[in-house]
Picture 1 (spheres, rainbow, N blue to C red):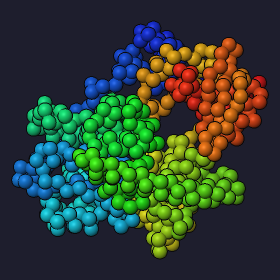
Picture 2 (picture 1 turned 135 degrees about the vertical axis):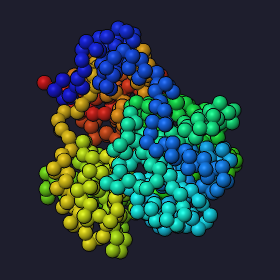
Picture 3 (picture 1 turned 60 degrees about the vertical axis):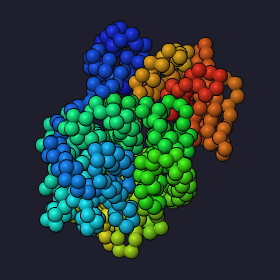
Picture 4 (picture 1 turned 120 degrees about the vertical axis):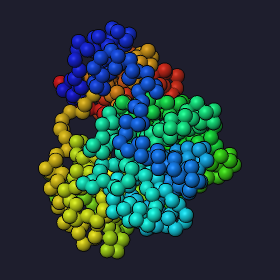
Length: 567
């Protein structure tokens, strides 16, 4: 298969998985490429449930965090939940607010404003919360890299507990720090989202209070799982280990939830009334939650998630939809500008290991989305920055094996603040330092590399004639799909089309056709690939995913790539 590179797997293991688990050989091969090394691991992978979850007490400082929260609850002191303006931060804030209020806490929520407050934990915001009567701040999805701000707040009498999942700096904050990425952590999984860590704190609090069997908490628990699933998928956390169970259970809970805010969000996103997939979060729910924080205040999204009044929830969801449409317009304009700039940069120097672009007119709320588009389009890490007077603020997105937090570490002398993880990060710096930062980032990216290039990687070869409904059903058991467990991509070679080829969609951007093997043909849809239509006039090779058919056919192929047939 010269057009594609097949993911390798131990043939003996594949045969054993197929035999013992009753799987099609193709499904067994895919399972083996997912890190499964035994029949027992395969069985657990196919049926993710609560048995995969690790005890929250295994996280460093969890006991200290629980005691700090319990003291505030017992003394009826006001607790602030300090989140972040992205989906993960908003969902985690909602989760802890629900749990702490269930336990009788007086809870204030605080989501920083992207422009006014900036990224991460702010000393000024902590002082505001202290002055407003809060005696304990519990962070969600932030705080690990803010030891100085936390120390200052504690000196002024404000207690702090940090729950986070970002990479620690050289100095840890002087307070309970619940973070699976701590260097001294023995927790068996480092891939939790910020909401996932908040869920672990909620679980530990419930166990400490012997409340897991309380009817009210059992009724609330599915909503906590739903929030955890949304935060995990939206923050592109690996869907491995316990995240598989958290997302699988959370998707089911979200589909069935009666919480008015959840129902309104599903309706406005076009997801109500059907089983949810992880990509519904990535493409439909997440962008709408994110839109509020990108263009204004994420408090609107938080209010929706916490809302218990159906009429108010409908109104909040409608406001969120309006903001999301505005975000899409700004996104399209900035994407066109950034992609044009990137092409010009690469024409001057095709060997650039990364792209660093800036403009005074770019909206800070969407530069992260656009940075991701630039990175994906040009197959290299990208940093996009917007300039405001003498300051610059940026968002970075990774590609290949480049780890952004490590790249930014090497550029620290040029930055005022930065934080994030391997795939996504943010930073601030002086506008006068932009050129020096660009040179430093390019040097760091060149040294780190961005991973191997070559033919597109696929999970298995699968002739069109071998596709069946039963095989599709087996492949669906490998879900949820996302980072760390991508949807299986198959390859078929030497195909031809049967019947008419059509350009579909409002602007004719999508390509619809029947892909024919030797004995049968299946409907195929290639989104945003209208330009590939000439390739269908001759034999072609194709990479695709299996999906349930939207029409009369029970299975359809979602095309990832079309290439001229290899000789």
